[in-house]
Length: 274
Image (cartoon, rainbow, N blue to C red; front, top):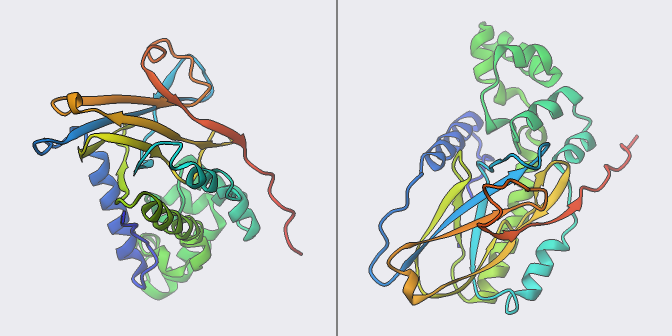
């Protein structure tokens, strides 16, 4: 089964560093390893348009999965993906009573947890949760800069990585369901900074490229469940596969698009509990 790395081990900062390191490693993978004899390669390209429909860009740091079988044979599985109740990152953190400054910081980096990127000195000044954590750390370490670097020790777990853990739990359940239905391992890749990733060592046959959990793009939940077939004649070369969102009108992409996402509005956040 595809392995999901959770930042929820007791040594929070070490786990965060591991997550960042793995992301950097994934971002650096810009070329496909040579396939074994008799297997093929899918070169996945994910490009989306946001504010300007005619200017698309690669969707970086997003995970995609390859599920054995056609859309028809995986129909009930795909329906379970798309019918899952969507909880946006903003709604999750607002439900915790998080500050708008923290929500904006997460959104700026497209982050699912505080581990996503470094907390800089200017971030501490702007985000109340970071200010509180650094103040507590400064009493303990006697150094403000050190307290900032280790602030994860003084953040509540639900603020630190609660949304990430919730997503990971749902993803694990879907992966188990997918492998049971397809009777084959589910492969996983992460896109690099240009929105490119490679599925390698593929036997001929039909597959579904899916993000399984929706990706938040421009205030909408975006689902990809795209069918692709690796044919025996494809084994000697990379099979290029460009997927995008419905808003992409970039002329550089139009002739090469192989699959468009299905989108739905993100649900409104429930009223905070008093």
